[in-house]
Image (cartoon, rainbow, N blue to C red):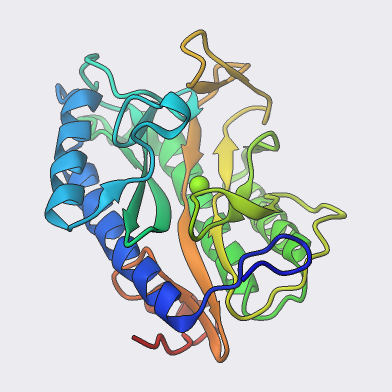
Length: 282
Ligand code: MG
């Protein structure tokens, strides 16, 4: 099951279990992001996620992971990832990144979305909206690249190129967080190989059918430098700039790719990039 470089290649039945987990994650994130509003607390979002994951017959990948105390991560404004859902009510204009993982029959799926709490004056959130959109596009461009590139490191180059393009279009400076990267996923949430979000010389691991990868760019409106807070979990930008995080779990199949954590398998976004989906076997 494990290849030479420690990569776990999945069978079609294992990928089908990951798809079931992925559908639970997608529905959970939809419910949670729909509930984001002024006055709602991250702890309340966590309760919604907990209910959805249980109703979907799954368990949280995060709860208890190295002692993590909640079902999902909710990271607000300068928090990039790993925020512990707390009791501070969300404010208009807050940038809210929600990360969720679920397990079905021992197989994991992992995804994240960033949304902005509606603000009566839309102009105040325009720069953050563009950051969120650039991060989402970088994720999709990275995912689409899996259909054509040969090595895992090439995904990072595709993500960096996407960010460069967004910076030119938006006339803005975005920082790519380099301390945290995408990853292999399957019978554990985090597996080999790492998937960088920037052009890198490694990993040279070949992209092959049976691989499942979490693609997850994290961008900021400042530098990409981050540090971990005193709670030992929350990762924040050093310069206090706003951050966004998008993630999906993707399967490499014999005849193409399939996004396990999107209801449509990624069909709509990948079609825009000239990529058609592979066929998932149950
Ligand atoms: Mg992840």
